Amino acid sequence: MTKIEMVRSAMVEAMKAKDKERKDSLSMLLSALKNAEIDKRSPLTEDEENAVVKKEIKQTKETFELAPADREDIRQEAAARMAVYQEFAPADMTPEEIKAVIEEVLTALGITEPTGKDKGRIMKELMPKVKGKADGKVVNEVLTSMMK
Image 1 (tube, helix red, strand yellow):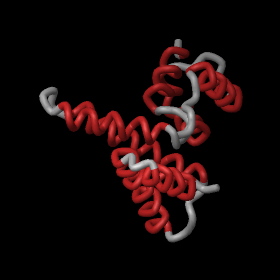
Image 2 (cartoon, rainbow, N blue to C red):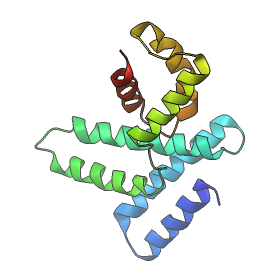
Image 3 (cartoon, rainbow, N blue to C red):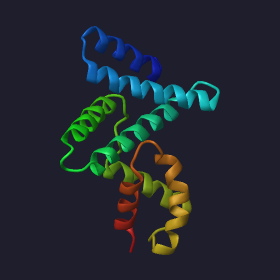
Image 4 (cartoon, helix red, strand yellow):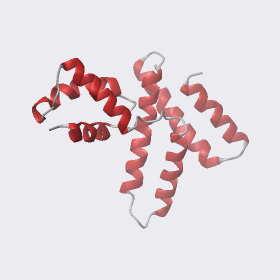
C-alpha cells in the first residue's frame, strides 16, 4: 500500500468521524504527495514519498516557529498538522545508528582519524546513505563530535 493510498484511507476515516481538522491536514498531505507524483510523471518510490512527508513536516514546523506569539490559532493549527504528518513519517535514525553508518564510511574511505579536511569527502559518501532517514543537522553534529 503506497503512502497516497494510506493517506487517502485515513482521510476517508476522518471524514466519516467528522474530524475536520484531521481531514484538512490529510488533504494537504495527499495534495503534496500527488503533486510530487505529477511532477515526476511516474509513481513515487517509498523514499520519495518519505521525503515529501518530511518536507511537509519541516515546512509546518517553520510555520509554527515563525508564527507570532500572539497568533495562538496559527500555532495550534500547525502543531495539529505536524502531529498528523508524523503518523506517516518514517522514524529518524538515532545518533548511535548515524555513528555506525559514519564508521562504515570511514572504513570504506580508509580514514582512521577524521579531521576537518576530510569532512567534505566523508559527507559526500555519507549523505546518500542516510538521506530521508536522518536529519542533516544531526548527521553533521555526530560527525563533528567524532573529529579530532
